[in-house]
Length: 98
Image 1: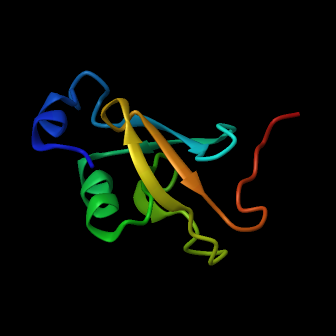
Image 2 (image 1 turned 90 degrees about the vertical axis):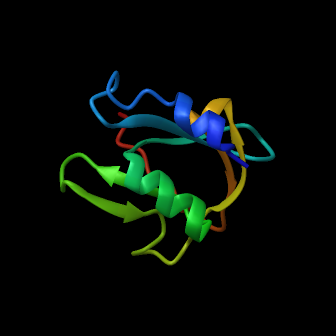
């Protein structure tokens, strides 16, 4: 769990209020996605246990799985929440890579 000390050490000003967050599969280590959190998204993630990001294009919070129903399960925080490990069901992650 993220401690209060770790939360205080996150430098939101340095990153223009958004912290990049990597989601990895807890077992394989495969990188599933990169998203961004603002302080509100971080709070919601901790409170709900569901990974919540801030959408830079829509300028709002969104919870991974809110449309598909395939919510990744938070299993641990790493490196001050700069990295997340999760497990999921089905093909719940897309990429826009060629």
